[in-house]
Image (cartoon, rainbow, N blue to C red; front, side):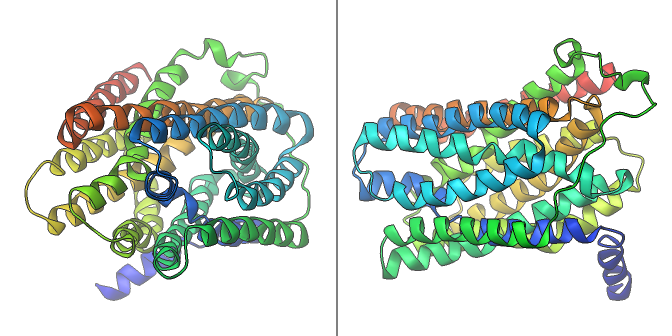
Length: 399
């Protein structure tokens, strides 16, 4: 049994290009330093003394910047290429995070977060397109999963180390580390990865004809609604859930960091073998997304069940498995659906759906909690997840 498991784990990594491995390492360095994001709502509430309504507005500004940055990144990727977009996005973002610690007013922080994410999220469509340039078509889902693995391995280290830094030093150290690791990541990127031309045009025109408009691709727009709901629900993990852990369950920052690191640790150990096995199965991508949203619903509804820390751990494990199914196959569906020559636009819309979710997710969650309490928020997230299940079922029938 152990030998079979190890073989499956090893096979899941076989055949990926060296460029994809370098991208994964660069992503890990960058993500391991991204300690500000999981603690941002706590920093705004406890350090800067903003009320929940102000925290919600700032998190919405975070989402608006991400939304416009994703669109800009997609347009720039199609115009000047993914390599330049990735380089300048990472480089500029590093300095933005360092400067962010010096902003303490509400409106100042609102604008600063907006511009930081505007620059930072031009990176997202570009890295999706880079996978099509640096990996073979049959390896794209696994290549994407390896990048996600690097993200989540970094996320395993980031919140835990971030919690220790907050406890022993202050929140300010998080901004320095976040900024410096962005700059280190981009220097490694420039050194080990060469700019590669991405040949978009091929003789195969078929359903991927370059004249086909994304705005007439109706199944893709239903998919984007599902992605929006997926992002809306999932992003509570970085806004309202840390507050729930601290205010209701009285966890310390270190304990919160450990619990959130469980998410990244499970993904690091299990996502690649699971994706490798599912790719070899008869399940289609939309069916897998459907079941992921069922897991999301269960996870949030569990938060209303009494049981202390054990319930929090179980809920985190369940949403992690949902995430492992939802995001790789959601990304893969968007990539395979993209029209040749317009990959940047397709992936920009995919990223923008997540960013749009971020605009509304935190603010909605904060307002519901302030007016009706945490329990009502978890019921809403469960209901939205079930709506996404229904839409996934309808999309599967359409396709």
